[in-house]
Image 1 (cartoon, rainbow, N blue to C red):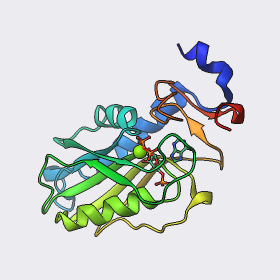
Image 2 (cartoon, helix red, strand yellow; image 1 turned 180 degrees about the horizontal axis):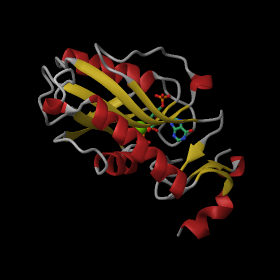
Image 3 (spheres, rainbow, N blue to C red; image 1 turned 90 degrees about the vertical axis):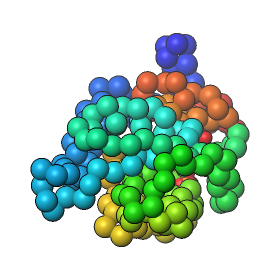
Image 4 (cartoon, rainbow, N blue to C red; image 1 turned 90 degrees about the horizontal axis):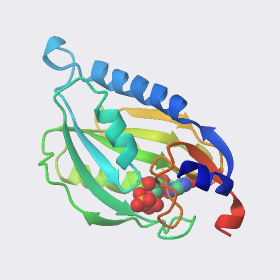
Length: 194
Ligand SMILES: O=P(O)(O)OC[C@H]1O[C@H](OP(=O)(O)OP(=O)(O)O)[C@H](O)[C@@H]1O
Ligand code: HPA
Ligand SMILES: [Mg+2]
């Protein structure tokens, strides 16, 4: 399947092996920071909230490498629809099942681009009483930032890789709901979206 899709990709940015190595590192960092009872300075195990749909693969890989009794939940936020430009107003269409009041939350994202999705979700989790909100984003594309966001309370910003200023697909990320199943991250050839 990936081979059939390869002609749509201008260049591969991170392959399966590089992704797997980095995800393991991020999970180890989170496991160490939220070490729980073994370390009295550490906060209790967090709730990991994946932002559907894009974060589904990253979340699945990340949680399998976290050695703590965490909870997992989802929200759905969508602002790109079938294009490559953010509407600037993420639409939330799936709510939390876990009560996050007084809990440490880690929002898990595939990519941070303009920052509007995260800014909106951090405010939402604050309104639900989370005691801290960290962000764990597989990719960060800082050159496109329009909305500043800040982790809540003692929260941290964990990031996998810095992404160039290109529209990328794969490892959960789509264009018009396609390419999410690519096991690597690549730059989509402009002829497929222009
Ligand atoms: O920083 P931003 O400019 O807000 O962009 C980042 C968000 O955009 C994408 O989601 P999208 O709205 O495309 O929905 P999806 O997760 O269903 O693909 C991506 O998964 C992030 O959630
Ligand atoms: O580069 C991107 N690719 C896919 N989805 C995205 N959402 C924000 N930026 C991107
Ligand atoms: Mg998303």
